[in-house]
Length: 95
Image (cartoon, rainbow, N blue to C red; front, top):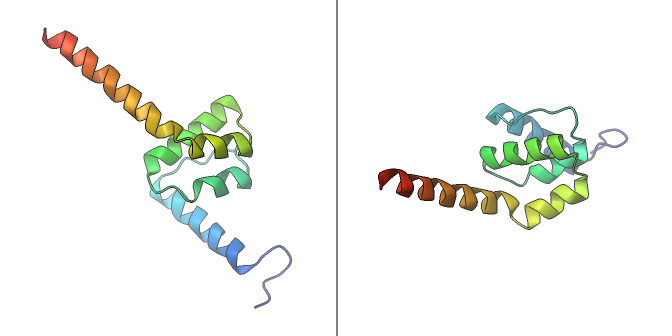
């Protein structure tokens, strides 16, 4: 199927995924490029997606940096750390 220059079936599928991602509530930041958003399309958790969008916006991560952070599961480590801190705070508060 001829879709025009720069538009193939996989590109259109990613564009649709992007549209659905925004519909779910992902932040739309002007600092992120299409390459950044393509990295985020594989993620399912909207909170995780917004975490990475926020980090890219604040720290000006490149696409490669974002890719590495996702690969190394930075968001999961962040959540685990927050959980531990909250648990410790609650323990101290209860005693």
